[in-house]
Image (tube, rainbow, N blue to C red; front, top):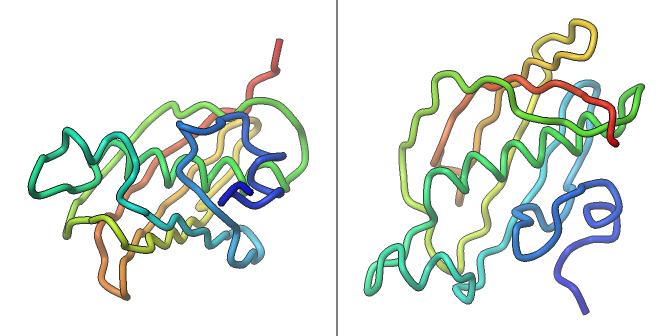
Length: 141
């Protein structure tokens, strides 16, 4: 049995072991809340850092990007969402084995195939990362 919801597996092109969203918690108009429960068995914890494992910041960003892709997947149009710009990534706390990472992603603006978003990730109500990013929806080949 997969820990990933069917919705996530169907809508995201990424697949394990490069999938950083377990499930969609809620959707709103131009927003989405998702989660990732970290078991401690993830490969990146083995080397980042032995004895004091923390989730790498780049993977925290990827979790937000994948959450944004889930938001885009429910809007008009189809294709592959690719990150085109990252702004203002701020890391506030660590994410450790056993944590449930919650990602809140909101659409700021959409112009043609460009989506401008902001995300805020938390663990136990504490902000671990805040970021703004943009994506383009491109045709899959």
